[in-house]
Amino acid sequence: MTGTAYSHRVGARTHQFRDLKDLMAKATPARSGDRLAGVAAQTAQERVVAQMALAELPLRTFLNDALIPYEEDEVTRLIVDTHDAAAFAPVRHLTVGDFRNWLLRDEVDGVALAALAPGITPEMAAAVSKLMRNQDLILVAKKCEVVTAFRNTIGLPGRLSTRLQPNHPTDDASGIAASLLDGLLYGSGDAVLGINPATDNVPQVIKLVSMMAEVIDRYGIPTQSCVLTHVTNTIAAIERGAPVDLVFQSIGGTEATNRSFGVTLNLLAEAREAALSLQRGTVGNNVMYFETGQGSALSANGHHGVDQQTCEARAYAVARHFKPLLVNTVVGFIGPEYLYDGKQIIRAGLEDHFCAKLLGLPMGCDVCYTNHAEADQNDMDVLLTLLAAAGCTFVMGIPGSDDIMLNYQTTSFHDALYARRVLGLRPAPEFEAWLSRMQIFSSADAQFRLHDGVPPAFQNALLGAA
Image (cartoon, rainbow, N blue to C red):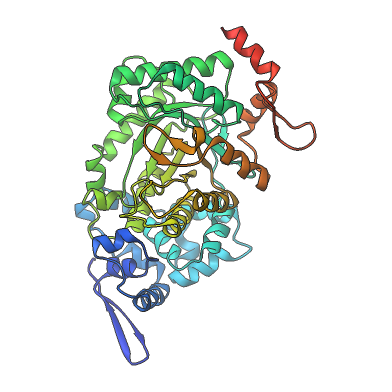
């Protein structure tokens, strides 16, 4: 059923919420996108009352009261049809508020959360996140362990991986190569060598994929590459014999949003099968890479009146279905219309990471903002530190933290080193071994230290491959 009204009495006044998506939206911490969509709470008092009402709601309500009707949306159908009732059984009797308390219990560890993940719907994850403080989101996400693999192993405890992003405004090969070298010398690139192409067509995709495959093969780097092009371009490149490692696609939490991206669930399944057929992985076969971000459903006019954070969580159901190697939220990329300032970006990043990890995804974050947002690099330092403490799977590594092709601010190679050093985190184990072999990093003194300059072993590798 849909459209059930909800109410909550405080003192002599009864507050009314017309349906579940209205209650969810009103309970959401303040953000500009929900105000733009006309779904946000009008006052702080209304938000608190909505959170109180949401806390008393049985978790199983979300199995019977769809925010977007089953008949109208293939993402809803995916969520309902793949729900694991047996995995849900341990928390079936709980309210949303009780579920928060259960998640924070010491005895609820990574094993318990991994077993629970198939039984949690995105709406349940979004609902409980709305009741949690930032520290709650960090603590529970830290307990979630999601491990994936292709040419190395991503997501192991005590590890923080990075996407080396050597974008160039004209796709110049020498410029891309310089960024690749720079990033590798900073220990970046174990998550993926991932390029956003300036010229987005099949021949260019093949050229860039082939160039990165040559670099990986020539220097024996245990990592994977990806050109962040539309999935249909990647399928066409595979059909033409390109050495594709990962298939990329931006996705959203509703069928309408995904249509705006030019994709369907069937198309994503076709792409995954095409990549699997190449058998290019060495230690695993997770071949998909997805990007998401709060506000995409509103931007596509595909939100159905659902708040942007819940729409974002629904995108994770799409990602989860295809067993990806990597997923990340590009948290502040769309702009202040959706996340106005540093405080909203920080909160959104922690919510996204928590919800995805709870649902069983290898979640990373592009810790970023646009230049017209009320945010700065200090805000990004805060979010990076909090996410690294929360067990974030990977972050971006971009020269100088300034993407000269996409024109936004994110995290640099140095920023990832900072997070690893402060929190005692290391790269993926296979990549770490390669860094040590190339003398880029040294662990002789029990500290993972960066070599000063181009180390002799890596110079010899460069000369030997010339």
